[in-house]
Image (tube, rainbow, N blue to C red):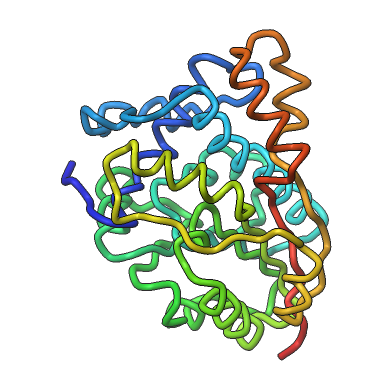
Length: 269
């Protein structure tokens, strides 16, 4: 598969993490579709990765899967829209037990082309090529049914004013919808940018961070429904199986709230 540059060049990092964790810690997280995609990975996909970085990436999916399942399980027909979808395999992990969900994957044209090459066309999964910020994708989604917007590993590449403007646009198209996204603290961003540079992709530096979830939700004019840290379940399930430095890093991230998932309700515009 072709090599991607810039932010699109991070396409394989979370896929590799899901593969590595599925192999090493299946009692915590198993992604059968990701394992099947291993032949598509470039030879250097694991460059710079560590046990901690792989688990940090997978913890997003672990927690977001549960949040999506809780949202969809309380409703009938609903939308789950992954923005900046990359090679996300949530459809494969979740659709079997959430039959009433309409799944949409939105990403840049070259990324959607890669998705279509790998996954093909699948019932109840729509793929839309385009920049998520121009909002053209929103007109292709039935906003009359409950909608959850999922942004995983994307906002960090924006600046705060861009994130707030994007959320404001989403409020116009999807009033009352829910949005979940992961965020890194200012301290966490320093570590994450160091890791990204280790992968050799120095053009994918991260900018946006959240140190106070309630304050950020207020800036956006949204209701903060939930704030989650990444690692409580991983620490409980894996315990002594983790390397000492991994366990220490996870406990530090928990104590300092370095990595979070926010769930917002988009107030009427």
